[in-house]
Length: 219
Image 1 (cartoon, rainbow, N blue to C red):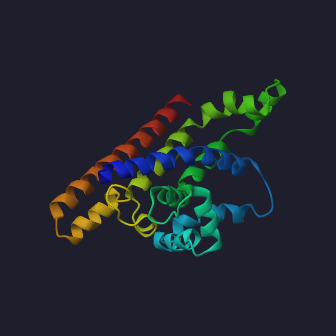
Image 2: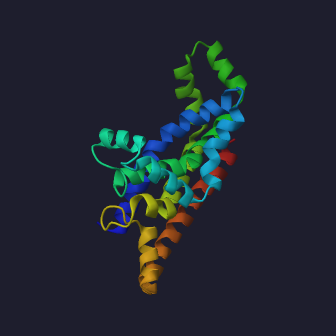
Image 3: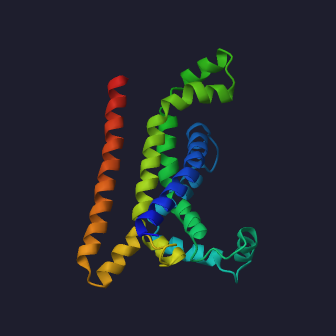
């Protein structure tokens, strides 16, 4: 299994899991007012400022079979999560949580409260209001969140190396493959991998920018 396949598989799983989580947390943080909200937001954004190796270190402690949490995780999954693809997915979810929540929170926060109240007055339930009113208005946040999660997962290195290791065909991603080729002075292969990630990242950002400009023209 090539590093590209492992990376895309990891990015796809991370995106699919985090999108609904980001929508729920983003909506809650956008509309709810409660004491300690700033602490919750800071906790969610913490992976943005923490070095990935620090996050990886704490995840190794949590996943370790010698710890209480590691025993529970091992019983739940039927195997230790260190140096496995499922463990890699969980680590990727933790690291990418801010990229899932923040665009959703901004998208929900831009919705006028009057629009939602008008839907309620018209007899729409909360679920129907979300489906018919809110969801069509936050598609740009969903697209931005998905793009950021997918792209960031493809390029993640520190957490991937600490939690997943470097197992060929299982946890060896493109970023680790680049590192390996540089260590082996195979700059040509490292260059090809790096160029592929560069092109994909640029294309993803262009999609988000073009959708944002299209949204401005239609409003």
